[in-house]
Amino acid sequence: MSVHASLLERHRKVMPDWIAMYYEQPIALARGEGRHVWDAEGTRYLDFFGGILTTSTAHALPEVVSAVQQQAERIMHSSTLYLIEPMIELAEEVAAASAIPDAKVFFTTSGTEANELALMLATTARQSSQVLAMRNSYHGRSFGAVAITGNRAWRPSQLSPLNVGWVEGGYPYRSPYGTLPPEEYSAACARDLERLLESFTAGQVAALIAEPIQGVGGFACPPDGFYGELKHVLDHEGVLLIADEVQTGWGRTGEHFWGWQAHGVMPDIVTFAKGVGNGLSIGGVIARAELMDCVPCGSISTFGGNPLSAAGSLANLRYIQAHDLQRNCAGRGTELLERLRAAQPGLPLLGDVRGKGLMIGLELVVPGSEAEGLAGTPDATAAAAVLEGCRERGLLVGKGGLGGNVLRIAPPMTLTTEEAAEGADVLLQVIGHVQQQLHGIAAPDAAFDGAPSAHASRA
Image (cartoon, rainbow, N blue to C red; front, side, top):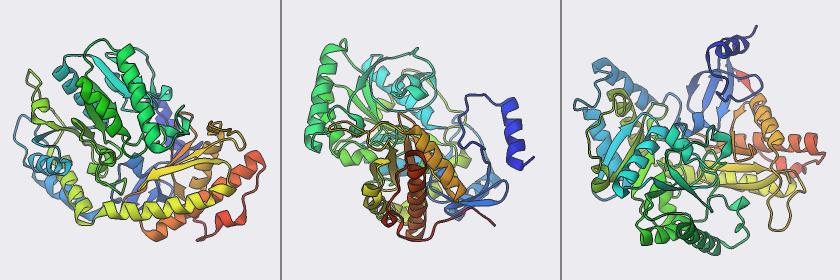
């Protein structure tokens, strides 16, 4: 029995059946370096997903490794019942990077927990359990976070601690307003929000929580300025705006440090996690002091902002800023998007190529199923086949979307031009192969111009 087969057998005996895993034969990642990882059987891969956008800079980044080692030699844990210097220092730098006036920060262990705290702050401040969330959204796996997740594939229960209204507009490719020009699209969705507030809600609404780019929803990108239009409506009613930056923060979108900055708006509350720790377990909430301090009782966190995670995250944040990884995301993202979009005419399987920086979604649809004003039929079978084919050729990508038909591309932010070209060529070769295999449509040779394909290798 292979190493992976043995691990899978043991996994199934002691882990829940509902833990989702990639690949028909799941693999274990045993080590990483830079933008590459090796599985438990020694096969090397170019990593284009970073553990769900969490390995944000690089695997085994020396600066982070050193910071964690040094902190571990001093003390690993104390809880927030005591002053934690690395946590305070990290909070100072996160608050400064947020641009939120008079900002305070609370650290958690995950994005899910961060979104729970954001909901508690908003509902406490507004004295209301009514919350707005975006269709096609994802905010975590806890009871409250599931309640505001607008993607049925990730909603195991319809029971909810909140009264939730669903807002249109985060997913233009499949929106009823999707054929409109960007400014008209945003205006139409703002009018839809007005009607929602007039007809659905009863009095005071606490907040709208939104991802600037919908992560699990398939990297769906509304037009720039979209949330600015919605906030005009929210401000009229006193509704708070929560920006879920768990996947978009820290410069990944290239053009801005935070995803919300593309919309000309200042959120009231920001949640974050994943990328700030480069693999360490950390999340958090940023809010104006008046909001953060509205909780009427005492509280603590046992593990949020612990010395180990805080020290490593501080080193990672400083690395991102010192090496201007936001600029690198913009450059490498442009290279990838241009390469993928240039090949799109010969690949009708590619219904939509979208994204910003190193956060790119490829929506696969049944060729020929698109009609005027309507997106193509989701092709989840093709997405699964491309995921497998990329792994076989030494490339790891993600998958998501409402129909399970979107490939998610999010490499570590230190990606090089050569690695971007290598990954794009593997993607296009596999998509072309799957298109011909499933639908009998050959891709033109021009779709495959570029560097030679990568193959899984042992090293």
